[in-house]
Image (tube, rainbow, N blue to C red; front, side, top):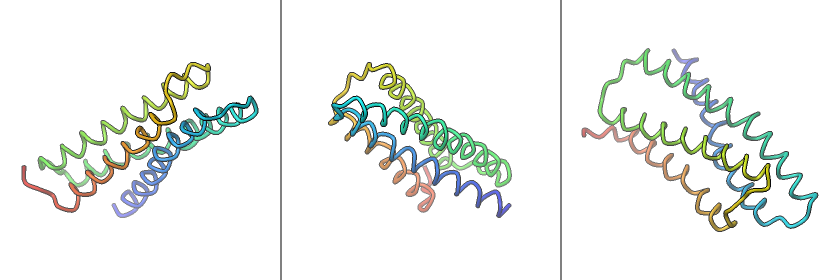
Length: 138
């Protein structure tokens, strides 16, 4: 079971690195005004989303589900954590929609929007860590 936990942590860190970095790329992409820079951001965003974030997210959820089955946790705080992870999956998918908008030159948001958007996964991560450490009785 220890190796399952280790792989879960590795994939979770990979996924979160992407969740933190892709919106930051969106900030810079929204500010770019030259064709070469815009093309470069499109490549970077696509490689990050499909090559790092999505595999990391899928494997995080898969190994997390495996751990859930092994540990057989049924506490209320854990179901809240699962809800927060589900929210992060929705955030990830919305990042994919924004990626498609940038790819087709349909971005409708300013760099300020993406600066705020970039903070969302950090807030969720803090909430998950608090839930796991404190394990409140709800």
